Each structure stands twice: as C-alpha cells, then as structure tokens.
Length: 611
Image (cartoon, rainbow, N blue to C red; front, side, top):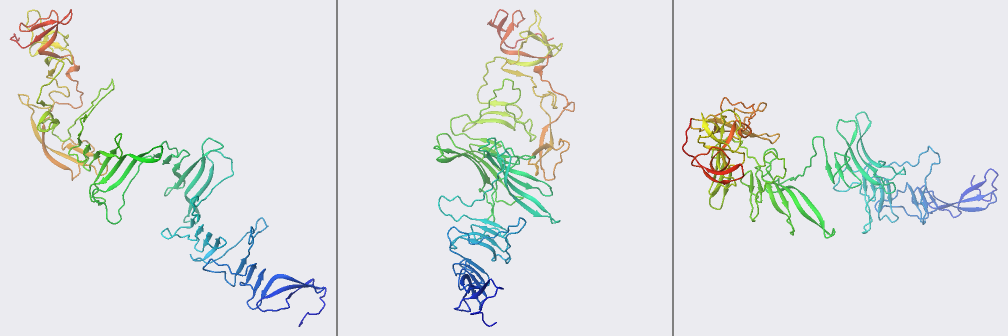
C-alpha cells in the first residue's frame, strides 16, 4: 500500500501510529490517528537515519533517550555512548528512574561491564557531577564518597574506600553505621565486619572479624563493646584477641580487662616498643623507645609528663651480635616542671642512682645533704637478713675482698673485709660494757647467768667458795665484744695450721652468661651443680680458696653456740653484774649494788690457780 491518506481505517485497527506530516529522517514525531481520523501527538520521536528513539525529547542523542533534556550525560570526562540509553530529566523531588520486579522471587537489576580499573559498572554522582557518591569499578573496588577506590599510596588490594566530601568544621567524617532492631540485651551482637578466605576445597573460612556488642546492665542506655577476633594458623576456630570494654578498658589476651590496658597470656603478657631504621641503622645513644606517665593539669587544659622509662642504644646495632642497651628512669620533683633522670641501668648491668655512669653493680651518688642509703624493716617478726653480700667470685675469705668501705674526700675511714675483719679510724661505741668469750662447760650443761666460773681441763664450771674465778657467765646481747663465736658455720669447716691460720689451695673459677636465659653463672670448676654444663667459651680464672676440711658434712644443719647449752658466754674484762654470794677474785672491784640480789663489779684478769 502506497499511502493511507484519505483512506478509511477498518475495524482491524483501533488506532494507527503515523509520522507527523512534516517529515524529517532524523527527527520525526510519532502521532496516533483514530478511525475518525483524529490525530493526537505522542512523546515519541524517531530518528530513522541513526535508528534512535526519543521519549519526551526530540532529536534523540542516544539509541534510547528519555527525559526532557536532550543532552548526553557525562562525568566531565566520558559521556553516555550514542548506542546506549540516556535518561535525562529535570524534576524536583522526583526519581529519574525506577526498577521493580513485583514477583517475590524475582531479580532486580543486572549490570555487566568491563573488568579493568578504568571500567565502571556503576557510578553515582550528585546533580552537577561535582562529587562522586558511589562507584563500582570493573576490578571490583568500591568507592563511597570518592571516585578514588584505589587511593595513591595505599594498598592495591583495597576494595572499599569511604570518603566524606563535607569539608566544614561540623563534619562528622566518613561513617559506617551498624544497627539492629533486636531486643536490647547485654552481650547482644549489633553488627560484625568479617573476613573470609577460600580454602583448597573451595570452602570459605572465617579468619578474622570485628564484633560490636552491647555491654552493661542499664537497659535504656546500655554500653558498647568491641571484640577483635582472629583465627590462629592451623586452627579450626576463631578466638577473641583484643577487647575494648564499655568503661574504656582494653584487654589483649583477655576479655575481662582489669586495667586501662591489660595484656595477658598463658606464658605471661608482653609488650614490645621498638625503633626501626630502614637505611642508616641504629647508632649509639639513640632512643629505642620510651614509656611516658602523664596527667592533665589546670582542670584538663593541658597535659604534663610526670615520669618516663626510656631505653637507649649503647652500641651501633647489628642484630644478633651488637645490641647494647641501657634503661633510664625519669621523675619530676615537687614544685618543678620537666622530669630528670634519677636512675640508669647500663648495658653492663651496673645500676646508677643519681649518677648515669656507674662504675659498680650499684653506684649511688648524692650531692644534697641527705641519706644516701636507708634500710628499714618494720616487721616485729622479721627474722631474715635486711642486707646480704654474697661473694660469687671465689675470694671467700681474703682481706683483699672488701664488703664495705667508707671514704671521705681524702682517705678510707672504715672497712669490712671479705674475711670479716672490721677496721676503722675511730672507736667502736656500744652501750654494753665488757669483753667476753664463749667457753664450753665441763658437764655439757648450762650455767646460770651471774655465776663466777673457773677453768678445768680447758672447760668451765661454777667456782666454789675459796676458788679464784676468772670470769662471770653473761646473758646473750649484753657484752660489747664476744669472741670465740663461730656464728655462721662449724668452726672446723676449713683446715688451719697450728696457729689457726687457714690453709689455702689453687683452683679454677668459671663464669658465663646463658645466651638464651640471660642468667649469670659463677662456680668453682670442681663444684659445678649437677645438671649444669659449662660452655666452652666460659671465662676461666686461676684463684685461691680456703682448704675444706674432709670431715665437714654439708648435709648437716649447723647450730650456733648461742643456741647450745654447753656453750656459755663468759665476761672477762669490764663492768659485769654478779649474783650476790658468788666467789670473786681479789683484784675485782665492787662498784655497788644493782639490786638486792645482784652487784656490779669491774673485773680484769688476775693470777689464779689452774687445775
């Protein structure tokens, strides 16, 4: 049929679509004509030359153009292709397009695109392309609030980037909000961020997660908690490694932290502070790490640092061989600002207090007029040592090993040697008055205090009337000096010559520091404890020591003479109390009565008969 013009439309057609009379091959509006030849316009425009259809827009620029604006959409770099679909409207408070599958099991929208990083499966911008709101790239990376889903300088494995484009001071920044409508119960999981990997069987395994939970007892204003969970290698379950509680306490290795930071582990909690030098390396004197103790001042207006513990290198570091380190302790004095170093532990193990270059295991220096060392024990039942010096170097009883030396600016003033000899430039002062020695009793029994005694076959017994005594039995702790008192060990533990001088022998001393435990070992080479092996690089020194008596039995407990009845303290010289009626020597001087039963005498040696 060449033309339908002026022809009657049969009942076969209800309406007939026709092009407008003013025909254009590139832009022809479609009209609808009824059987009564009434022609009505449509919103359809046809471009026969380019095979394009416009809906609501004439001169369509794309295969399908929808809307009232005949401009191809663009992101300012790339526009919609002319063979694609272009929807461009200008309506306030209206959606530009909607897709709905009313079937309950139907699907919504399928988008397929290239798989390169510069291909976009989805890109959402604001109305003037000034800001990107959401992009999905062909490589799977997603950007929310930013087109840059692979930010320069960050990992190429980044999948999701969220950026807040609001630059105002009131901006809250980029936000992810997780919420639930479940009952507000304690311990309820509000949301999780979960990481999976695919195993060799194609199954997804959960390897890490961050869980957000409610935490607290207040139902209306319940607190929050965050658990960080990680699966250990070759393990089938995931476990909580760190927890932030509702009160702000952080637990590492524990879900119930009892402090602001609680680090716990079955083998003991640990914390590492380290310095990393990628190029120059660590040289001597550099800070390896520091732990600050700070607090707010002026009602929180400022924060001050009150104390610190600092580690410094004392070596040019070479890991595995040179790692010398010192530890420094700093505090701040009252009414001052800024902490000062108070104590140092040098790489040698030497400790300096008030001095940063100690020359001994403990080096204390004081410039103010204060006590340098103060030892106090307030326990009424204390029965151990307040201070003990134990020689590990083998010089066990030589005068050359000094336990204590007091020196003024010019000379030594007092000394206690390793042999127990006490020397001093001045006198020894004591509230007690006499010199005494221990003697063994003839019958092995104790003698009453205040009794005068005589010597019989090298042992003592109570003096009888008419006998001349040489001393008085004294109570413990009342004599200024007590001789013949082996208080620590058996008096024949070491061999001596006929005059009581100890015999000595040569031996080899070994010492080393265990490289794995850091424990220092020091032994006589022939007395190394069972189970301990001396390494080949141990330091060996030739020394001398006292000769041990072969009769000495180290398995037996030694009871000192003070605790044994057969040994008694006898006052020999000085002022002593004597029980009335006791025999006295003619040279002794009566000083007066102490009580109705005791008198005070000044006694001193005198000629007497020795049986």
